[in-house]
Structure formats: C-alpha cells, structure tokens
Length: 552
Image (cartoon, rainbow, N blue to C red; front, side):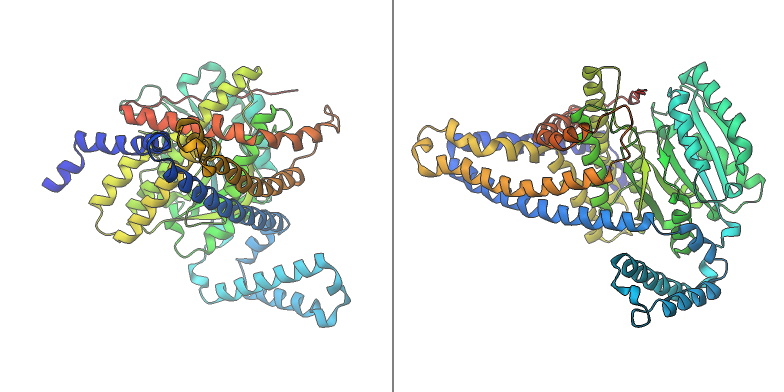
C-alpha cells in the first residue's frame, strides 16, 4: 500500500509531466550552448545525426513502398468471399486447391502475364492460410454469428459531412443485417446536431440490423470534453442492447469513426475475417490506414503535404506492427471494451490512450493488428487560408498531446509486475522516441549545422566550421530521394480529380513537396513542442473539434 501511495502522489505525477518537455528543451538548447563553448562536439553530433536520418529515410521509404503495394493488393482481394469461406473451410480449401491446379504455371501460358502471376501468388498465400485454419475450426467465429457495430461520433458537424459517411457504410461489401450503426452526438452540440443525427437514423436506420442516435449528456461529473466520453456512453448503450437481445459480446466488433470518416468497401469483411480467425481476438485492436483524401484536391498546398504525409506515416507504421498504436478510426471487440470499461473519459486523446489502457489491463498481452485498407478522412479545411492554418496547427497539437500518456504509462509500468520489465522498457522507449523525434528532429536537421559557424568566432576560422554545413547539406540532399518516392506515390494514390479543377493542378501536387521542410517545422515540430511545454507547465490542453468546411 505504501508503494502504491507514492506512485499515485501528486509530486510524482508532476515529475513525470515535467520529464518529456525538459528533455526536449534541453536537446534544443544544448546545441546552442555547445556551439559557443565546444563546437566540435556539435559538429560531430550533427554529422552522425544526419547520417542516422539518411538511413532512416531510406528505410521508411522502403516501408512506404511495401506498405502501399500490400494495400493495393488487399484492395483487389474479394474479402467478402473469403469471409463467407469461414462457414465451410474444407470446401473453401478444396476450391482453392482446384484453382491452383488449373492455374499452375506449368499448365498455363498465362504465367507470362505479371498480373496473373500476382493473382497466383495471392491464391497460394490464401491456400496456406486456409490450411492453417483447418486445424482450429472450433476457434473461428462463423459469419452467421458475427456482428459489426459502428459508433460514429459527432459534435457539431453538418449533415453534408455526416451523410456521406453513413452512405459509405451502405456501400460496403458486407451484409447490412449484420451491421449496427450508432450515431453518437453531443447534447452541447445543440438542436441542429440532434436533428441531423436523428434524421439520418430515421432515413437510413431501417437498412441496418440496429441503428440509433444516442445523445451524450453535457457536463457529466469527472468527464473531460472530448470524443472519449461520447463514444463510451454510446458503447455502454450498445452493450445494453446486446444483453437484451442475447448477443454474445465476443461476437461483436466495434469500430469508432469520426463524422467525416468513410470506410472503403472491403473494410468490414477484411476486419471481420481477421477478427473471426484470430485465436487471441479479445487481446487485439484493429487499425485500418487513415487516408486524409476526402477533400485533398480542395485544401491549400501546405495542408496537402501534411495530409499526405500523415496518411503515408500510418502506412509505414502498419509495416512495423510492434510500434502500431490506435489512431483515429480503429476497431476492438465489444468484450475487450467491456473489460477495459470502454474508452477513457478523462483524456482528449482517447485513441492512442486506449492502446495503453488495454496493454496494462491485459498484462501486456495486447497488440494492434494492421489492416491494409483505407478509411478516408477529411484534410483540414476551414473558411479562409489563415483559419485553415490555425485549425491545422490546433489539430496537430491535439495529436501531439498524446505525450500526456507518459505519466499513465510510467505509473502503470511500476505497479503492474505481471508484465516483463524488458517488454515495458521497450514500449516506453518506443513511445518516448516517437514524441522526442516529433518535436526535435526537424529543427535539429535544419539549423544545428550552421550554429558553430555563427556562434563561435574562433571556430569559424577552422575548416570544419565551413565544411560542416556543406557536409550536412549533401547528406540531406541524398535523403531528398526519399521525398521523391513519397511524391510519386502521392500522385498515383490520389482520388480522381474533380471536374472543377484543370489538369494543371497536378503541377501543384508535385511542386507542393518543396514545402515539406517548412511544414515539418511549423506544423509538426512546433505543435509537439507546444504540447510538451503545456504538460511541462502542469496545465491541460482543452479539446476542440477540427473545423470542417465543404468546397462545392
């Protein structure tokens, strides 16, 4: 009891809040101090740091290429057919064997067709998966028993934002009689929000197995203003419905969506297949790839760079599932949500925090499964450029507020003795490194190489002082090739160009990438530094929904 008291004490909480911001500010100030008193240290540090990021940029480019190929391949898989195969796996395996026999390269001249070869290899992969499933059919949830539930959170978004997200659910390759829809809206959103939610449920609700517009009460004691309390309230209502209708909580997958999120047609069957076949499904979260492409043609160039970069970052993270965390739209079994008491009602960053709540609730036995399929979202667009820039900064500052999980992670790592120390240290290291790099890397890469030359007069007379910026520049120039890869993939992944724009807009889509160094500092590093500084000061970040505008 004594041990727990100091872990939960206010002074220890404040110490943990101070640590991330202190490390970041020390890292930013140290090169200035060393440039004045010991510039050689700075010179060798920045060369090593630039080389590290050169290697990292090529590695991340490799992840992006591989991830995009996998996502493209998965978009062409008929997941609904595979999901139906779970009702009779022996029959599905026999059909797969027959397809492979008919299409064997030794028996078909079509093997020279690269597209056909890809299909053949995919059939081989699926055949191997079916053989693995044959040995454990009793652990699989058949499609006839599985439900998907969508909780769509809204605060004050217009019907023009909400309705396309609902319509996207009607276009999924998944039986609607196994799909539930809850539009979770806020009482403080006002009468217009209530009307929009109820009208949509009245109009489209009969098409689903169950549909409801659920109002989250305003000013509930102990709750922050944010998405977490809203979807938690709706999740508990969903639990009540399942109990009343004798639906096993393990047979329900819950996906949380924002008002502007539009799932791809194969998202639900893909998710259902992975969930139904996973033996340890209750200890998993499922993360699709958020693609901020709904309005990508409409937003200003800096916002396009940020939206595309954020989308591609999630593809790269999906290639490293050991680092993957819940972000924005994600899915988890209803049974798992009940065991974790749904989402947090005390933090405005409920998505990433849900990973840590699950990780500690399940004694470290929790992982995020990547789903290589997109959920399309809006890039930031407000009324006017300056307002758009402000909204973008606020959104990224809110994302960076995930650093506020640091005290929670450390406290629970100390008190939970059932998780291996090595595993906890790795998780803490990944979390800390991610937020540290977010706040410091763009500034270090851009400015530090020139500091010794301008801040130390005696060092400025040495050859190294003049060579250092040149060496750093050449290293970073080589890493630009990674940006070229990003630009190429961004062009081939774009949604169709709206008729209101001329073909010349493609030129802007290419040239926009010269803004990357600026956006990396202004809309990445600085929001992260601000978030960590707010935590350092002992204050809290207030939740604000990102303004969404429609360009017609």
